[in-house]
Length: 212
Image (cartoon, rainbow, N blue to C red; front, top):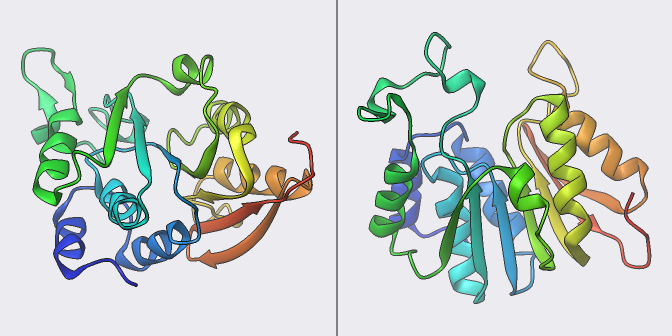
């Protein structure tokens, strides 16, 4: 079952950095996950959140969308992807949370998606809930990408799904940290790769293998 035409329209009109082909592949990956808690790392304005929320609503799952909503480095003033319309005039800083709330309201997903506003370092220090689906698409510096994998991938249940965005094996195509995360996951023996769609990688947690 593909994402509904209504939600597809919302995905296409929401600000973000996931092409339609990858969004469709992310939805397909989410349909492989069992009901339970699904966690998205890196939400921005909610483009991929709608994709996951649509699949979760059909499956009876809950999506937790974790983001500090101040934008990654490339979203800041002077960088290529800075969007002045997303700046909070009172704080003088980027704030994408209002855009996410609006996106979820329009998509009818407010009861399916629960946003958490905070850093992965803070939330990762206390997170303990098992995950049936984990989507890593947060800060792509080496330090943070590796932290996010270490902090959250250990909670993916046996046979659960791990998806990683912006994976570029060739440095000429993009940054390397998400690619290094995928390499680490596969080489650990804890995950096996299921699918590749452009920069999206989908993996499954293998039962009986300790996380490392």
